Image (cartoon, rainbow, N blue to C red; front, side, top):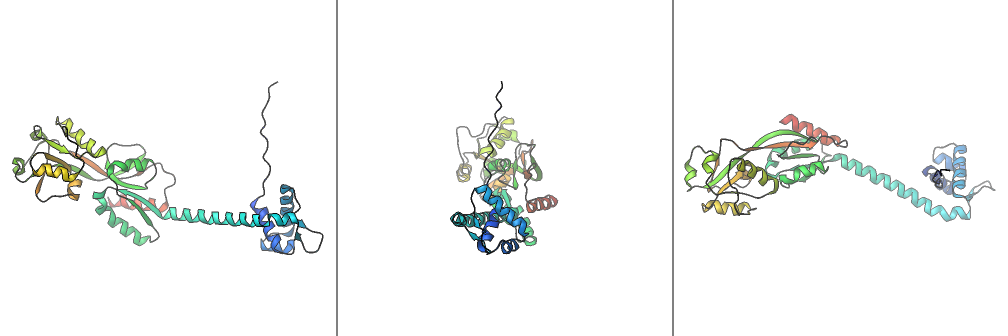
Length: 304
């Protein structure tokens, strides 16, 4: 004979409605008064008290007199019931405040060089919606995609390296790849440069995660050696090599705008013209996007 397992039914527990009735009954002299305080009928109130006593297995009120009063069992749980109801109410208030705050927060992750484009839109939006709170992150572009995928960002502005099906992206502009040379360098006077002209030159690219991989990959496609036995991650280090004509710096136009050195020449290179896409992005499949974040996204898209 096959044994069929039947899980035991857990013991019933008091409901919030029953506990609220108990609390009001303990604070009034009759069930009628307590029922009125909760906007309940007296029969429904009395029924809730009886159900609570059955659930707890104890008589909580002495009904032998015209005025009801707590039994010793009722007195013993009165403080606990009051605490449970107060804690529940505090929890509900805290939950509502958290949800309200969350609905007013827009989490933005933007690469440092593009805040100048984004900030005016934020200011105009906040004038129309004073309750909005922007939560900002200006880490480098290497972390933008990860932040979107993990749901830590509502709207992001960064470099798009690979098309992802879950990411909704809109092109803002392109980030051209330039070279930096000293003003004394022979290439500084060239009116036009091709990547093949640089094939035998010593090139250096800042080694910064996916940004470096993107530029280095593009250069290797042109048959060029990048950072041969060098590991530079500081713009100051690269510029020192360029000033001394030891290296030719390869830098993005966004990075150049943020760290422009007037003593250097920044030259575009063509055939092919290497560029990366700067995009406005969000997670396309998030179901819990706050309404204000959606509204701001729509306005940014309209401005493109």
